[in-house]
Length: 461
Image (tube, rainbow, N blue to C red; front, side, top):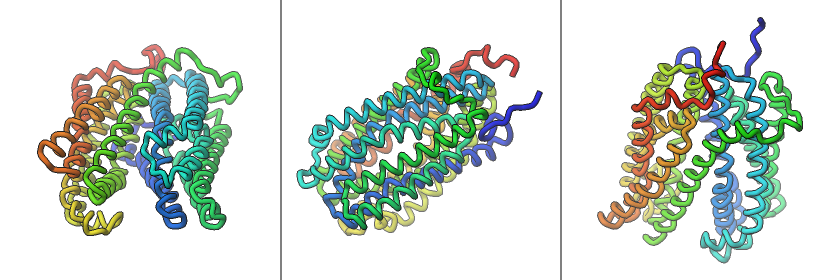
């Protein structure tokens, strides 16, 4: 019998280190492009509109990101579920799973767009948006709402492809979106002077472009993917929806908690003055920049773990964990050392004011430790996510975002009188919570029996 052609690479076969690197690199490049994507609006608007435009884009983006977290969470759920189905050889269920995932995400995206559109002004007010930037921020956020269905659709397509072991195609979609956004920013903001509204329109059109290309890509390969694209398939299947909700709802809640508490912590740092708050903001940007490699490892490893749990290859899961710890950990140590050798120079990339640079040495020590904590946390949380234990991921998120983050921030910033550096310590060291939860789960071995795909589905594989 002729073997059916597949999309992506088989994550259950071959050298773990080679497969992990091969699968991870497109994640890394996509993450870099997405970072540039989100930065382009800020740079262009900041240069050609000024501080009002910068604040408008910043506030509008933060609110929009809170609602697009649902997309990321359910896309992760889809990737894990499809990955386990592929690993278990249960391709017959993939068609219904994709139909259910896309239908659910479309419904959620429209709901989110309506909520943000109607509550636009209210959301900006409770975020303490400066009055001078309120009009620009209102226009930006209102326009951004129209892009929700496109970004949700794009994430659904990428989830399916990554679950099948294809991380290269999503990279192509991100590249298309980034280039479109850059060109339209220059045209709409610079050439036509459309200010923040122009940046928002550019973002929506670029999201539409990514979504359209993703759908076309899947449609042309529908026989290989295993999705028939029939209108009757775009419905919610109760069995598969329950699995996606079981993973997606806790992950959504986790992301929302972390996002909201980060906003609270940021507001608290403003009490320490302009330069202290700026230093905290720089440390966050620097961490996000340096941590892109570890984030890529986390996403790739979770996808590999999902397929191997589905295939019941438990020894290979252990190999993935050990390999990720070694590879990502080594990079984290090197990055931490380099950061602490040149702390002022790295901070100056974002802000070269002397009053801000004075915080650089202490902040970089915190970041160096945090990078190692992030590797441990991300590795073992990858096992939690790969097994589809959304509830356990939520427990780690609650401990991280509420208990440990606020507790550590209060301890370091106020009780030990470390000020804004203490807030940086509290925020970053809170990762010990999900790291501990993930480690305990991994050592318990419970993940071996937590497959989302029934044992009978693997028969004859």
